[in-house]
Every structure is written in C-alpha cells, then in structure tokens.
Length: 296
Image (cartoon, rainbow, N blue to C red; front, side, top):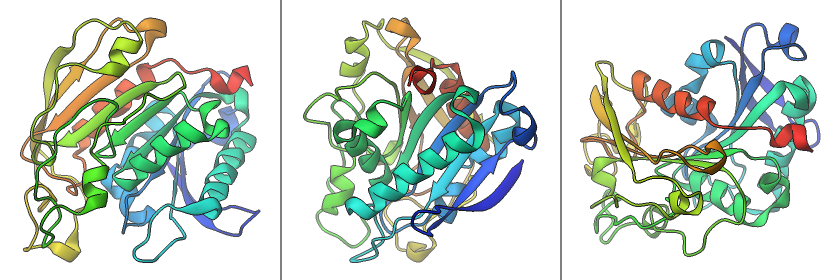
C-alpha cells in the first residue's frame, strides 16, 4: 500500500493519506476506489486513529483511499470544532476527488471514533457539502441512529460519566435528512444494551435484523489508551487483546443500503480494532452502493 503525508494547500495543514499501490496508474481506468475519511476522537490525533481502525492494512485488497487528519482545536483537549476544522475537512475531500477523479471514486464514507463519530453526524445533519457526497457512515462508538443505553460510569476517574463520552453514545433525537448506509460498532462494555431494532433500517424498509456468524480474532488490535493504562474502566477500555464480535445486519434495505450493528465482546471504548473485525467492517462498506460522486 502507498502511505504518505499529504498537505491541504489552502491551509497548510497536513494529513495522512493511504492509497492502493497502483492508484496513480488505474485511478481513471476500470478499477474503482472507495474513499474513507477517518476521524479520530476527542483527545486523540490522526496517527492514533490510523492504528485504531487500521483500514490502511487493506487498502490494496479492497482498493481503499483513506485520509486521516488531526483536529486543530487543542483546548481543553484536541477535538473537532469550529469553522477551521470544517474547512480543513472540506479541503481534504476536494483534494482526494481532484487527485483521483470523481469518476474513479465509487463510494465515499465517513468513519469516526467517539467525537469523530459525533462530528460525522453533525456534518451529515448540517453541511450540504457532505450530505451531497457521502454514501455511508461508519460510527465507531461515535453515536447510533436510534436508541442505545450507556453505562452510568464511563470515563476513568469521572463520576458520573464524562458528558462528551455519554453524548457520543446517546440516540440521535432526529433522523438524518440524507440517504446513506449506516454501520454502528461498539464495545460490549460501552453499552448496557443494544436494541434489536433500528429506525434507520425502518426508514429503508429493511427486514428484521439477522445475526451473522461471529467474527473471531486471534490477534489483538494495534493501539489503546496508554495514558490511562492500569487505571481505566472496562467501559473506557484496557489493553488490546484477541476477541469475538457479534455482527447484526438488517437485510433487504431499499436501494441496497447496508445497515448493521456490531458488538465487540468484552471490549470498551479505546481498544484498537482487531484485524478480522476491521476487515469485516470494510467488507460491509464495499458491499454498499455508492455513486453520489458520479451524480454531481
């Protein structure tokens, strides 16, 4: 795979860019690309997010282009906020579409962990630039469209739970006014319970959810919250380790939309995703319809 540090020429800000090895020679030919904008959570940076959700390890196999930036706002901690970050994200998307050509990008997905997922939701709700371009949203513990109950104590040393962490897992009070596929992935210890229904699935007339075969990983993820190692909660997360993930899909959604819930058993908020569940999520993404880029 090709990995580089790209530059947003309008702001001078850098971001990580992964692409298939042959992207420059086939971008305008018959092999389409899937573009992921991979957003870190509050207090994190792009380099951490790239290891938390290591889609880059599969960029050649699934022809993925992955842009992984860092937020500029640093107080009280680094997080996505304000017009400057939104402009940077706009510029990254424009850079990718110009670099490879809109016709070469089969689908565009937002991927966000925690506050990065909340930011994805905000952009999809309020920003026509993204509403008109995004084909899907993968929320990595970054909010679910529909109800989900969260534990009372979440963040280490913060009774009760840190408001942002709780907000990242609350239901959206309103539905998004756009068309897209939606995948929600969470650690088992981040939620009290996960409903067996989805208003997003109902929107597309999907059938009742179906449990797919579990994904069993014998290898751990690549990253965790080292700052709180030894003093974390199970909800926040501990050391990365092998694990099992339950996969639920809502089949037969209108227009072929992919709608799914994934629960990583015995995991919390910050253990990096294991290789097989990472690949399973990517397989769901690439199986979903795209086409918004070509329609513009």
